[in-house]
Length: 143
Ligand code: ZN
Image 1: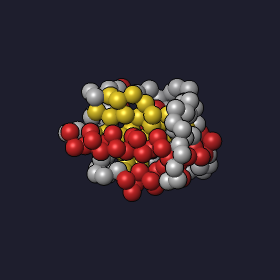
Image 2: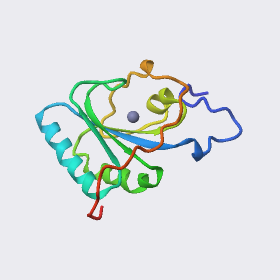
Image 3: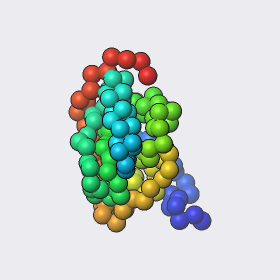
Image 4: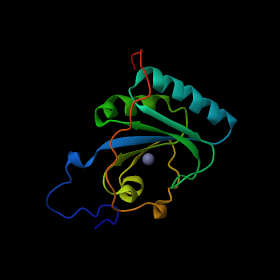
């Protein structure tokens, strides 16, 4: 029995557990920061999401500087593949938002690019599942 899959035999977890997603786009040196800026502009031109503040210092469970992209479940099938093609070597953490933030970040996420550490110990295991935050982009371009 794998420790990473604590789901008991029987009923699978339903998709309805997922209220929204986050993509955390990490950057380190100046070149990575420039690519993060390039990505941010192009995400905003193409996807209905909420672009979060620049976090130039590690915050919460995150080990590197980053910004967050909050998005609704119906955006996943276009934004996530687009990030796979355009991450330019940056590490991106894509995690669901359910009622268990610790599990969302440490057990159930996907990584685009190289995976980084996540400080799951600062996250709770029972919370209200976060709905997608209010969109602050006005996309005009096709992905
Ligand atoms: Zn997050």
